[in-house]
Image 1 (cartoon, helix red, strand yellow):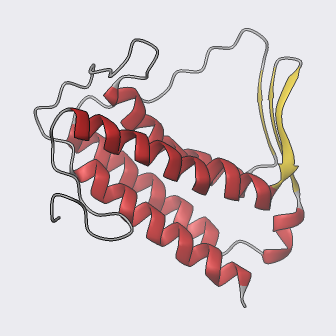
Image 2 (cartoon, rainbow, N blue to C red):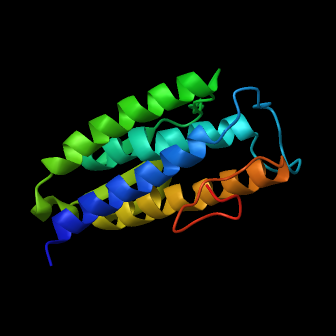
Image 3 (cartoon, rainbow, N blue to C red):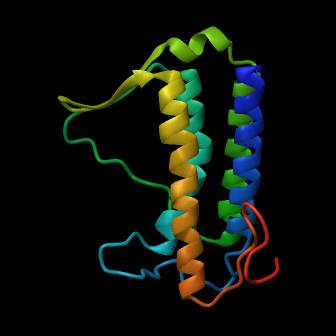
Length: 167
């Protein structure tokens, strides 16, 4: 098995499926909707999906470390509209796809770190970061978005087969 080809195919499948869920967000949706006070808003969650599939994937492939200085505040992407969300998703995943296509397989063993102040949050191989913090993380939050849309009584497309909505 060619691991590199398998990882590219998986990323392509999962980003295509994620885009279908993002497309299912109604144009008039309230991006401030939260199913629970501790939950992210729908806009925050959708933005997080775009960042995970795009910028996080790109950073995993192109960098060896992300370091935030103590007290630095991360400003997550929250889309102003569905159109802006899809544009960012498409642009950023195209960049990640291009990087993945030319990524040298030997680099999967390279170390990757995420450090915030004096705390190391991630310290693992690029392969493990890619699998856990890009692909698995994307699938996890995509499922959350599906629950949000279901709670809003919106139809869902199928992900790994048909949905109950026949989409």
